[in-house]
Amino acid sequence: GAAASQAAGMGGGYGNDKAPWRFTGRALYQLNLVRSSEARKHVPKDLKLVELFGWTLGGVYLARYDDSPAGTFDEMVALGGLVWNPPTSCAWAARVLVNSKEARQHGVKTCGLPSHFVDFNDELDRAPERHGWWKDTRPESGLARAERFVKGGWKNALRKNDEAPKETKGGERVVVRDGKGAELCSLALPHAAPSLPGPRIKMFLPSFSGRTDTCPDLLKYSLELNANVRLSAPVMFNDDAEADPAEGGCGKKKKKKKSAGDGLPGFIERALEANRGVRRFPPQLAVASLTASDPTPAPAAVVSDESPAAERDAALAGILHGKPLLCIAFDCMRMDVGVPKVVPVGK
Image (cartoon, rainbow, N blue to C red; front, side, top):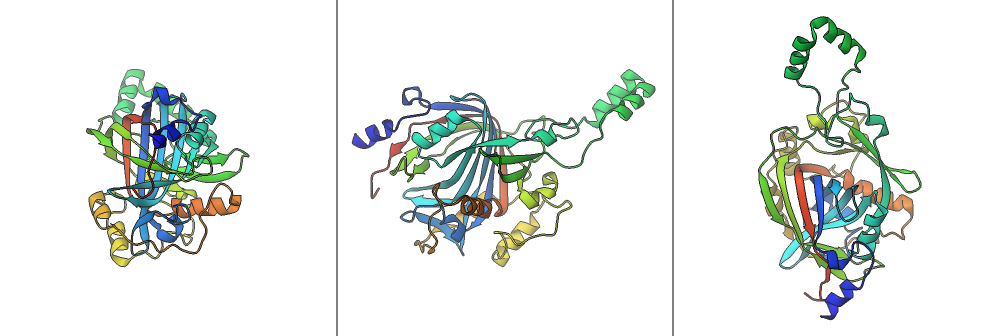
């Protein structure tokens, strides 16, 4: 009806006649515990926040698409927290960062997303001694080195080893910069996918968006995802990126600063410490323990694109520095996204 035609008339992007829009590639989806006070800076005040003891589930979605309506591009979504709109709930996107202008235009005009054009700068990690998820490369295995040693002769192998760059401990680092070249955050990525793929699954993930100056209504769109899934080491951010993400963040680090994840309830903190490194924290327990509570909005105003840059960056840091619970890798991913539709008021 009128709501559907209003959504169809938002304009820009990939073209509604070509929906569902298909994206293929790989992604990391990390769940973080985020303070409710941080989440409310991004979630509309009239939407209920799914929370417990002052915390909600946020996180980060990081994807590298090898094919999409906008071609090849990268995307990072900072998820502010879970919002409740009966009978479903979903993560609310606080910030969407893409390195494609067409994808940014589609996000803003068609999907009502807070999309921004950025650069994912991995210049410092393009040397062959760095391996990880971003470039999808792995260090040479012991078996491969032994085979090269036998085939090439030990003298030739030694000469090649002397000339080759030494392996550097730790994963890749990627710096995210805005359109003016200012650094927004830096990422330390986990290892690449193993040669043996995980199980193939199919998921349906309806998502909410909107409530922006361009798309003031609350929108809902369908999302169907097919991928091989596996557990991954976490993505680390900024100061935390000094640790090796492949070791669960337990490598050398700078002196720890107080972060948005400090002050967790004791039983949650103990659960995180007990599972640090292996990342086996069961997501069903995390989700089941959170219930929709009556909203008690903090007096702080919602952060928007009109807010000063320093305020937006501080709000982004509050999400990224949440406590990692679980990181899931989607390999050989195929994702179909439908046209957003306006959610009627009161529904």
